[in-house]
Image (cartoon, rainbow, N blue to C red; front, side, top):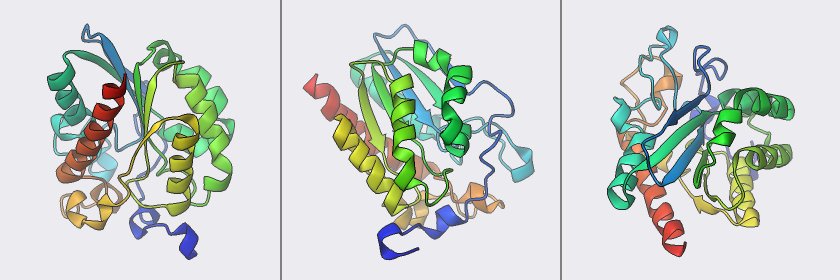
Length: 234
């Protein structure tokens, strides 16, 4: 890779299969709590991965947090609830979309209508790592198609870049956020501190380079800071 499209060795060595991360479960999970606002997480394995004993992963939450309450989704929801009161939330797991995005419109209509009908007030877009490493130049239109499908008019949106650095894709995500008036949350520098990953805790290389408890905590903390600014403006 040239200097203008640096891809971290962790992304290059991520060998967690992108297909069937949910073991044929629905890719949409909704958690109605009777709240006044709704939060939707659009994510991949970092957001939610079902148990997969073949690779040594037994969790049913964000890979590779040690427990559900320590992944970034549940850390963030706990912090937001403490600040804003009860909130409904949901997850749209789009790992399959990341691999099939050129034909992803069909997948969205077939599998994500429930997420669309959830009508979130806030959307966290936290995906990209399973896409082809050189996909950034041509994939923005597909991101926009997906966002137009899942994000209702008037909803707040926070876009993150990648946990494993991919300069071209991260640049595209930052520009997309700016052009559409979304908030942007940088996390691509976190992997520079190896303590943010679960190395040494899992034998499988791909699982071990996912964010561990510290990485999940730092992702959540950065998102909290951005969301507080977004909601303060409303």
